[in-house]
Image (tube, rainbow, N blue to C red; front, side, top):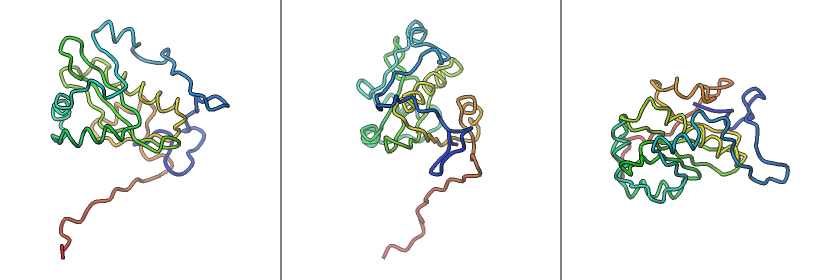
Length: 186
């Protein structure tokens, strides 16, 4: 699942417009384009966070498990977050727990991959996933990132399409490396 291409140059119709000014100064994202404003999120009891500070990894892991991800070693989650270029999560005021989360890694210049997009099942269908994704994409665009990819299960492709993601633009096919589990260990 890709937004605006991959390693090859995307066609103009798929290319993201960089929001950097000519001097490469970072500009602020526009809230006007968000489906739910920060103020509306706050009024509904959700606090938007852009750092891992205050994020309880055991609680985040519980959200991962609740949506069908495998339980992860929290020490490894911590390392992954340390190597994350952008992240966004929503904390529910009443429980002080994370209810929506997404993060991106990349080279900081051209490419980013979005990972671990989750919304606690009891908070789904409230627009929180869309709110997190809109802001994460904006944060990446503000940095000048023009190629944004994500991995997605087929059952949720419809969620990402309205956000601008397309499957296999220009017939580009991704590949993944899979370790041979049957290799002889001599």
